[in-house]
Length: 461
Image (cartoon, rainbow, N blue to C red; front, top):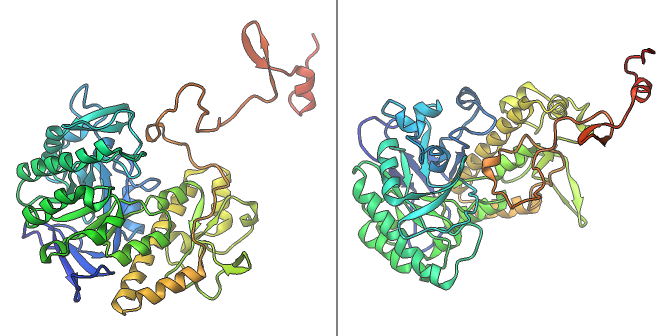
């Protein structure tokens, strides 16, 4: 764990790095009071400050990730009516105290969730639109700085003019760099010198934001602590100055598969947020891939005449109901060493929350092991060859969802208008059909029908 002495995030590139070429690299992040964080690696995505399906004590006991991604929009739902509860939390490390997360974890606070819900109203010159649990609202740059000064995350990501869900027009593109540069300057100038701030890199062509990026490289390279990429494809175009190349790179590009992660690592990305971990867990899919190659005992399937391994196993089918094997061979996570497929399939079928908790523990362990193997591969100089072997062994995308996941949390999704189908299936319904009687819906079955289904006998008057 990094010493309490010192005041800011320190990033060390391990090994020789050719600043003229993009490529995979090893690094280490040290933050006072937190466990050192080796890269490439990932931050777990949280929902309202909590890693979905896992309590803080489960995170401490059964996970290996070193940091968490939090979103300010998760905490300020009462900003219009009063002070958000998180701002009244006492203590020097408010985010850790409010969420009860282990103090060893690095906290990264961004304006929006990953992935973010598209807002109906765009950003302005002074504010961005966010989606809280009580609806959309705007947070100004001034307010954002105030929140950051109070919450003091280990890593603060500056506001960025990002058009979620749509391609920006020519006029909008011209504004994006100017707005983001202004907001970054305001945050850097107002925050204490020891605060680590990551400069956002926009999801537009490099030339369209070159003035802003050159400003970061020339004026703020010694002030900002890292770069946050909303599009990993921009990374190779970043000026390879000595100062810039030593900054850690965070991907907010939301990779949808391990292959996408490997591609970004090959470009030189250091830290990741990976939404597909949560998507897989909610779908009841247990990740099973290993890098660079599967175990000899792994089950294969044939696709287009080629034998490929699935990246995960759908645990909803009843074919798992009698299997006493773990989710993944040789996996050492708590789930695989303590339970078997049949038990987890039963939990999902019964809609027991523990089922998703056990899969979530397993899936985070698989990703942690994946990154550990990637770092070892880079260290051994075999990364490119190992990536090719991984591509030959596994399917390119995760399995399709077949079962219904846990209840959808409504504040994560934008309403599309009247007549929209409910996202959660009703937990129960009527015994039979329904019919209209006196303006009310009543079961379309009488006492005789119910008696025929095994209910109490009809009592004659």
